[in-house]
Structures are given as C-alpha cells and as structure tokens.
Length: 113
Image 1 (cartoon, helix red, strand yellow):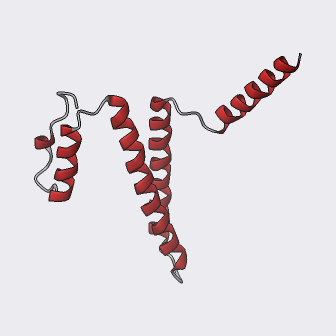
Image 2: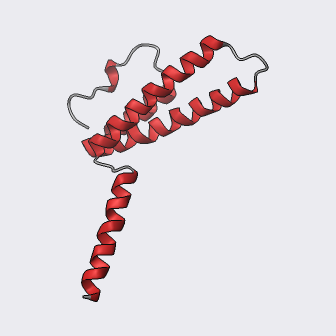
C-alpha cells in the first residue's frame, strides 16, 4: 500500500487477528481503488451486524428507547459512510441503472432505424 499506511501505528489494543489482516493488506501492495473496495466489503459486514442488532431489539418485549435511538443514529452514520464510499468509487445507485436501461433502449432503436 502507500507510505501513508503503517500497520505498526495502530493502538495497542489491536487483536492478533486484526493485525494479521492489516499486515496482509500491507504486503498485498493494494491500490487506492482496492482499499476502497475492501472498505465497502467491511461496511457491508458492519451493516449486517447492525441489522442483526435491530432484530434483537425488535424481539425484546419492551425495547429500550435509548437503544433504539442509538441504533437509528448508527444507521444514519452507516448510510453516510456507504454514500461516501460509493461516491468515491463512482458506483451509481438505482438512477444509474435507469440510465443504462434508457441507453440500451436508445441503442436498440438506432439499430432498427
């Protein structure tokens, strides 16, 4: 990876598993685009855990209002993080899919005409 990344600068509380992954990332000489893709995969993992937490909250007979508020705030943060990563990666959302469909339809009409 770049010189800006240094796995040894992490906090002392880093687990061996985390250190092993970080060392492997450093050895892999990732491009910035690779790092962004990895970030998106990690975000997907965190979002799954977040949804599992919601299921646990909903299963409770009397869910704690504070826990629900914290979950909602975390949800907003995760959404912002996803939007940022997708924007940096240049990934389009549903609007991009519609543009692709419109483009394909226009290509089909041009071939017919």
